[in-house]
Length: 190
Image (cartoon, rainbow, N blue to C red):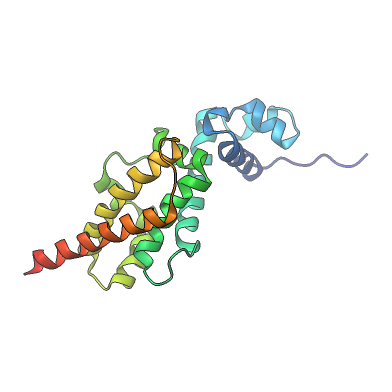
C-alpha cells in the first residue's frame, strides 16, 4: 500500500486559491478544500483553526498573484504606466472572481487610498512606474492615485458584469487619464 500523501499548509492555501479563482472566495470552506485535495477535512482544520484564517492566507496568495500579473503581463511595452493600468483592467476581465476577492470582499487591510499607496505590496509597482516616468516618488504616487481611481472603477464594472470590455476603448480612455495626470503635475510645478 503506497504511503498517504502529506497535506501541507501550502497545498491547502493553493487549493483555496484555486477555489477562489474558479468558484469565488465565498465557496472556500473545509469541505470544498478537502474535496479539491482528495482528503478529509482534518488536515485543513489542523493547519487552520478557522476558515477565516484560511481565507486570509488565500487572500495573501491572491495579492501576490495580482502583483505578478500586473508586472509581468506585458500589454503595452512602450508605456509602463499605461501597460500596468490596462493589465489591472484585464485582470478583472480574465480573473473576475479573484478581482472581487481582492477588492470587494472586505479582506483588504487598508481602508483608504493613502493606506494602499503606502503599503509594502505596492512598492514594486510604484518603483517600476517611477523609473518609467522619471518622476519623483511623490509625483509618481499622485499619478498613480489618479490612474488607480479610474482603472479600479473601470475594472469593477467589468468584474461585476456591468460593462463589456473593449480593449481599444479602454486603452484610449486610460491614455487620456494618464496624460491629464501628467499635465496636472506639470502645471503644479509652474
